[in-house]
Image 1 (cartoon, one colour):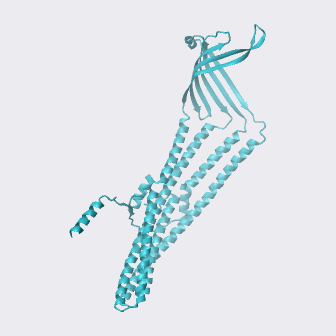
Image 2: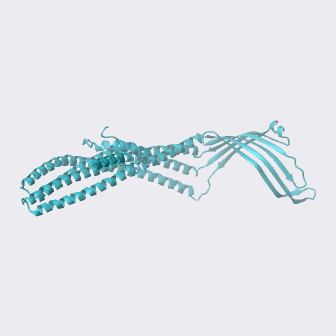
Image 3: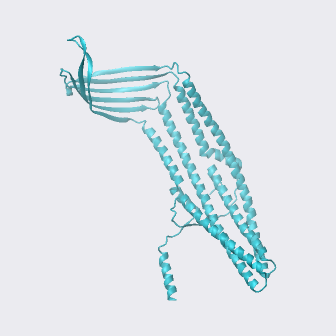
Length: 479
């Protein structure tokens, strides 16, 4: 007795150091997966990338400030120059050392595709020339500059539009990934629950077969049945135990798959619980298709791709048109050998240039590029049309699958009741000796099949409803 007590307390103490098993419901698993799963993290990083790209594009339309320094800029070379004392060209060694700073303020003009700049520069120059002493001089300059393309594609506005469209696509992809994770976790949860119930069904079969075998063994010992009937039940018992081992192995494998799916470490111990009730829903095919066409990210992104292709066509087409560039500059500057004198008595620095670019001959290159861009646009339109048909086909198939699963659930749930009642009657008749062990085994097999088929039909129905919600982005159960 003392040894038994010591063993009991040792087991109790050891159990305190074992990791606690986590019991998961479907809601628990979804909560974990939407934070820890690979799929949701990957989609989240893609969304962040698009958000930052749009933020960068918008910030790029603000005034930018840049500074440059030449510390120093040095040059020494031989230069051919006319020598008036000899009347011939001669080579002289010339060079300079310059220290210069430049400051740029640039403001893009998104509505006109132009750029307005304020540019300032200041430098100190030390020149040298063979046999000639050149004093150090200073220079300062401050100018306002406008660079304005005319009659051409507005690339600033287009780049902003592209960034906004790509962000919307990433947001839709994130929603799609989230829906995909929800469905995958729901599917994985039900598969794991199904594996667990299969273990319970098979274990119940083992217990039933063991009880029948014990009854048959006693009857054989009493000479009431032939040995072959007892042996048949012994074989059935071994077979059911083998099925139980396979079911337990499959259950453990499903647990590992599920932990990997939702982002839990493989060494963590888990189990699942669920109350799977059957609540039939009525789904109108036209309504489901309308939800899918309105909400599906594939179709919305395909529409966005059409907009992007239209922008590309306009951009490529503009390259073959007449364009102009207006460059205007107004500023003040001063050069002097004394540093303090370069900040007074400024000279004016003005310029205005209108450059007109007229394509003359490109051997049809631009026309081919426009045709290529239009072909890409037609391809995007064709893809949208095909994708729309694919979505319609998917929804019709899912609704048909739901209706089929509903019929199976209703039929098979009744078959379980009938099979259970038939088995109970057959067991009583076997115990009374009116049927053989083979007949009892057949009824037990029908009962196991009925329970398994009923469970599979219910799981198929639940997964079909979840798949419909994923592919329409609408909750038809109204939860």
